[in-house]
Image (cartoon, rainbow, N blue to C red):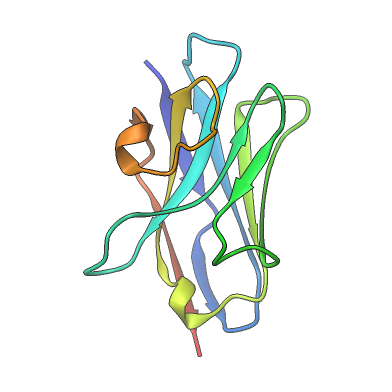
Length: 126
């Protein structure tokens, strides 16, 4: 059974940076899609970015392009990062790591992912 554990959330001033990590264990396949979602209070869960672990292809939502970067550990493709720069108050949300089999192409909906972490809170104050 795949398990995902996020870490790295916290509170930061607007304009600051945070790096989130997600450790995956127990996945039966060598390649899969790992993604970040976020959910603010009263809002739908929103896809942020994803990476295909085998090809390294990266996908990002338009709202975070130029500010957020997703990457994986080169030695362990089961360790995922989300580097968040130039943070804004509207980035405040619970951030979740998610995983699904095969490619990340067009996998931007919550239902596209089978596995989820418990989430880590990011709070940006203006």
